[in-house]
Image 1 (cartoon, helix red, strand yellow):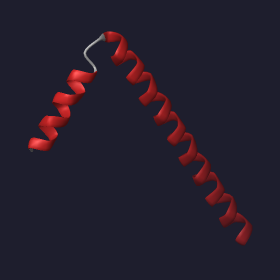
Image 2 (image 1 turned 45 degrees about the vertical axis):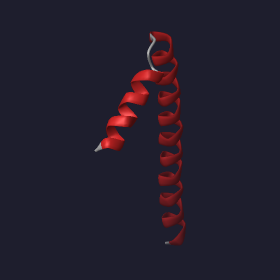
Image 3 (image 1 turned 120 degrees about the horizontal axis):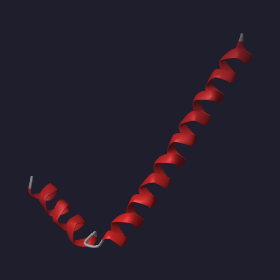
Image 4 (image 1 turned 30 degrees about the vertical axis):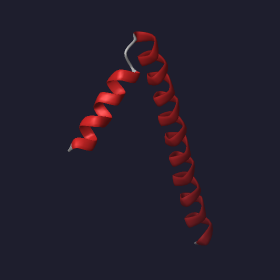
Length: 54
């Protein structure tokens, strides 16, 4: 539990201004869209491979 508390304290210290929070939120949003797009691509390729085998 101490590790989680240290992590939260560190994040609170790093994100002490609105500008830093805004930039970090944008980075996290971009990363989530990237991984969502990759997951969608993998799912559609899997479906195409299954259809080609039949």
